[in-house]
Length: 418
Picture 1 (cartoon, rainbow, N blue to C red):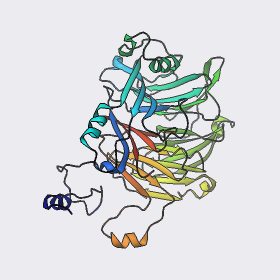
Picture 2 (picture 1 turned 120 degrees about the vertical axis):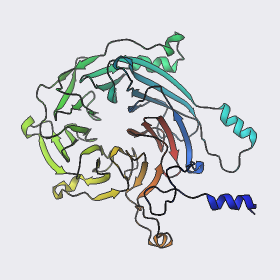
Picture 3 (picture 1 turned 90 degrees about the horizontal axis):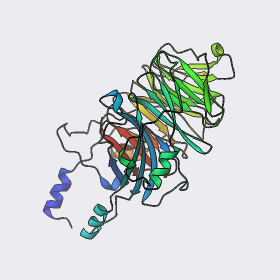
Picture 4 (picture 1 turned 180 degrees about the vertical axis):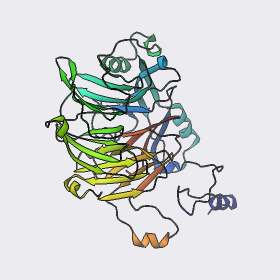
């Protein structure tokens, strides 16, 4: 039985569902995370905000589910001064399970406090804030690309830093010292800075970059360096916001733009003819796209707050096969689950990170019981607590783990939903 105090607590505790008519909580109310909704939840900060990052694959095994977990990231800072920026290589270890069924004893709580996660960091000095950073595993090398707000794109080999971070700094003090060294390769041919960038999953070392002046450049590796094609892919009438290589075809990629379109290209065709299909995907800027690794679907998110799913076999219809409206502001990041082809995650300027399953259908009986709650049937989970979320990524080797970055730091979590 519950005591009177317990009954009072239950009456005062309400589920907070953003954007619903039943939400009576004001902006000044305290929101408390329901810990039982997370198998794991950790937060981390790295000093200056890192508004772009990439998961670094490791050799610790695939589809890992056992706790504690270990993972690696590479991130780029946006410091208050151009010369204070860094590429940050991060090892997250001892990521323990944070939710335990039942009521933990005092000793259990002490164990959890003593058993806090570890964050080991290496850094490389970088001139200019990092708009976007991406990782590529090229045979025997961990290569990253950085889009700087100076308008340059740099390539770096972070293999040494990953080795040192795993061997507890043989040099002792190097962990706290910023490494000052030159990049492997720098390209300054873009007429403006940009954000769009993607490494090919099928052709090692092949890279695409897109800028605010509408140009897309193709990079190809040759003899330990890179050649950037002189001619750019042209077709968008506004800034190129995101790029995605096909996970299956090494000559096909997709782009999205502030001109409201998503375009599909074939690099084997002459540049002026390379755009194969163009669709008006949103009513406003298209900010982000994600190409499903397992099924022929592309996901897009726009300034209109809408998420659209496109069936690549039916692009001629120029209509999405699914549309989801929940976010109240611009979508800033989307990504399909690496193995579950119907699940994706998204986040927006409304400070919500959402997880969806497009295979779910509306439960009419449950709808009748909760007529006052109007949320899409495919919406699995809402994660909050971060401000100005910029990027999220599933960790492809840690089953169900999502990492997100925002103005107030990183969240690393695994929900009960996926």
